[in-house]
Structure formats: C-alpha cells, structure tokens
Image 1 (cartoon, rainbow, N blue to C red):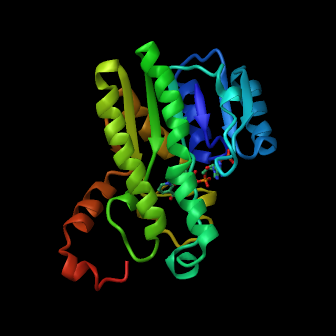
Image 2: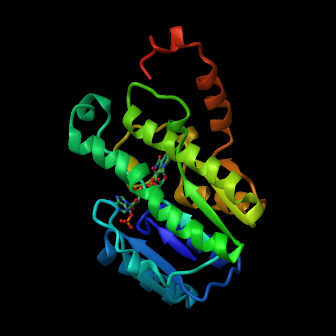
Image 3: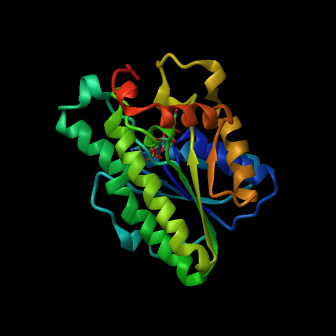
Length: 241
Ligand SMILES: NC(=O)c1ccc[n+]([C@@H]2O[C@H](COP(=O)([O-])OP(=O)(O)OC[C@H]3O[C@@H](n4cnc5c(N)ncnc54)[C@H](OP(=O)(O)O)[C@@H]3O)[C@@H](O)[C@H]2O)c1
C-alpha cells in the first residue's frame, strides 16, 4: 500500500482499518513531508500488526525526486495530502499562502498522482483513494482558494476515473465534510457534522470495498451540499458562508 500524507490521522486510521480487516500488504510505503514524525506510526504498525513499512520523504513544495519513487509499486494508494492554509480574510492576498494551498492540494499533487496512476495503468490493476473536499463543490467566501484547489482535484479525479475505467484501475474520490484532525484543531466544529478519523476511515474502507466512485464521509453532508449547490447565485453571493 502507498500512503501520501502519512501523518494525517485519517490516513493512519485507514491503514489500521485495512490491517484490522485482514488486508495483507508486503510493505506499506509511507510518503511524508515530515519523515521523522512518521517514524512513530511506522513503529506502531510494526508492534501492533507486525507490518513492515518504509518511510519515503516527499515534500510537495520541493522538487519531486521521481527516482526515489521508481521502485514503489502497489495495488492500493491512499492520498490524504492536503493543506488548509489561511482562510480568505487573513490569507487571500498572501501570495505564499495562496501558492502553498494551490500546490499541495492540486498543482504539485497531480503530477505525483499521475506518476502512480501510470504504474497502475501499465499493470491494469489497482485502486487510488484520494481525499478531496466538499469545499470544492462551491466557492465560499471563507476559504475559496482551498475550495478552488479541491475543485480542481475533484475534476481531475473524475477525469482520471473515466480514463482508467477500461484499464481496470479504480479511482475513489472522497469528499469529507469536517473531520476532527490537526487540520481543524481549534476551529469551532459542530459535532453532529464532524467525523473522527476512525469513523472516516471506516466509511472510506466501506466505500473502497463497495467500489464507490465518490463518497462523502458522513451522510448528512450529501444533503448539506445538495442545498449549498442549489442556492441561486443572487442569494448565495449575499450569504456569509
Ligand atoms: N479535516 C477536515 O475537516 C477535512 C475536511 C475536508 C477535507 N479534508 C482533506 O482530507 C485530507 C486529510 O486531512 P487531515 O484532516 O488529516 O489534515 P492533516 O492532518 O493536515 O493532513 C494532511 C497531510 O498532508 C500532508 N502534507 C501537508 N503539506 C504537505 C507538503 N508540503 N507535502 C507533502 N505532504 C504534505 C501532511 O502529511 P505528512 O506530514 O506526512 O507529509 C499532512 O499530515 C486532506 O486532503 C484535507 O484537505 C480534511
């Protein structure tokens, strides 16, 4: 299994979910921009599941060393890479913040996903599970740089799924609503709309096994986003969302 964004608690909960369900992996490749922090999780996998893993440094804000990724092969990829950055009010005119949001969620991530998609295409098997966001469904004033990057990622994944369909590679787009992770630490989240990493991982695993194309983490977000998508623009632009 290949994991991108290995320090995400959702990614870690998903790896544990797979192992707890009896999935077997010769090795789990933990790609991470913080390889030292990832060591703790690698140790945990070894102790709890006797699961071998290898940590591969990968910072999307640096030049990607594709040579280091050449020998990484697996039928399952889970991508939790993402960066929320500053919201519109504080960050819209901060070019560094804007570039990092666009790069980590979309521009620098897509070539890496392409790299692994090509490997799966040539083997004619595999599943790519990628976490996008409900934020990509409609631009809102509070975080539309992040939302627009996720919108790009969602569209990319839709096209990739379409392209890889007859090559026997499956692409699952996950659109989480709120999840209780370090990304949302300190934000006032409504508990009824927020999933724990464990709950998110269980839902994503189910969607993966059921070969879903698109999955929301909590069902309530299907309804919320249906409403958000359908509010007429002349009303939507006046809302403080
Ligand atoms: N939490 C939410 O409410 C929520 C809602 C909707 C969507 N999402 C999406 O769900 C995914 C997982 O998010 P999370 O909540 O678990 O947040 P998180 O803890 O911040 O995880 C995101 C991971 O992305 C990786 N990352 C960040 N900057 C990177 C860079 N420059 N290069 C490479 N990797 C980088 C980091 O992993 P490493 O340290 O291992 O590199 C980080 O742990 C993200 O795509 C996020 O956008 C989250």
